[in-house]
Length: 251
Image 1 (cartoon, rainbow, N blue to C red):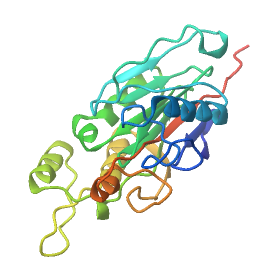
Image 2 (cartoon, rainbow, N blue to C red):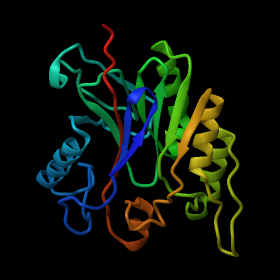
Image 3 (cartoon, helix red, strand yellow):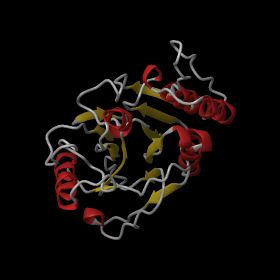
């Protein structure tokens, strides 16, 4: 697991596909419950993540939308009293008793941190980028009182590896304003640079980019890729990216 130092003492984290309990074809550290992996095994993988992060990690049910769920908790231990997390593609919190994360396997994972200590974990796939999940997340963070916003962009499929139909490319460009990359080869299709579009949307929303993970999920043998698995004719797992907030003593 990669640990990322963030402003205000917060720590980001990115898991990978190694060191967990899952068997083929989910080898081995699948974090997602919705991909067909054994539920008990997935729970074991999540508990392993909790141990490595040092607190319980909360997830939402991701639906490729733009809803932002606020995870709140009072000054109590171990996240007691935290509100349950429902359907959302971004989680926003100022709670240091527990961590928040999203799961991906080609989509763009993002951590956004405000200068007031609040932070968000954002799942930005093609559809999420089209419906404005990044803008919604940054605006939600600003609504908490944050004046300055900082972002870390995690590993995702690169534009070279993400071919789509012309209709999908046209829809993406119309919705985001981000032009598709030209086809390469006689029978090739347009390609979408999701990470480039995500960075452009973050910057438009006024977020400074602190770090950008250049790893391509399709090309990496240590990360899950839904598209690579589909091309190979099987299913696959999901890795997680999230943030654990540092407690600031206000006394």
